[in-house]
Amino acid sequence: MAPCRGTTSIARYGERVTSESDRDLLLGHTAELAAAAWDVRERSRVIGRTKVGCAALTSTGTTWVGCNVEHAFRSHDIHAEVNAIGNMVAGGHQDLVCLMVVADRDRFTPCGSCLDWIFEFGGEECVVLVQRQVGGDISTYRAGELMPFYPR
Image 1 (cartoon, rainbow, N blue to C red):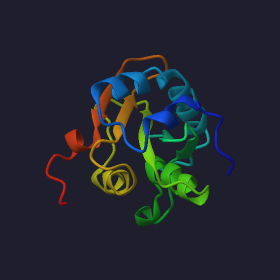
Image 2: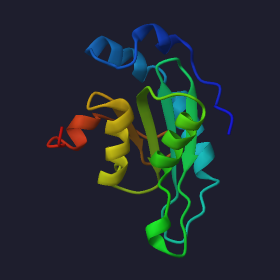
Image 3: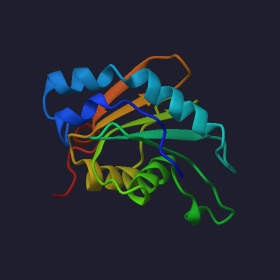
């Protein structure tokens, strides 16, 4: 899968978003990450009720997308976050800076399994953005806030 055409301005900020000013700069790119995530969400294959889209941003400014792909044997489901991270790795990147996760559902954040992948490639400082409706408010977290007792 080819990457989305994302912003290129993040590259000069290094592999991790480490300060509040870097975090604020990153948040200036949320509209394009949200658009990419909502777009790919439409291609989800769901058996359940929740379509999820994800846009993963690398330190070079490349955006990779993924959607959930559900399977009759539910243990084989692929979550949108893991799909996007897998596409990022397949594209030659291992430097996750931010994920935008979108789902038309209240109180939605990445699950513990997805957070394992986020920690693996983005660390506890990785920015996780969540939007519950197109054009709606965006909740902003660091991975470490979503799983504060992650085993290190």
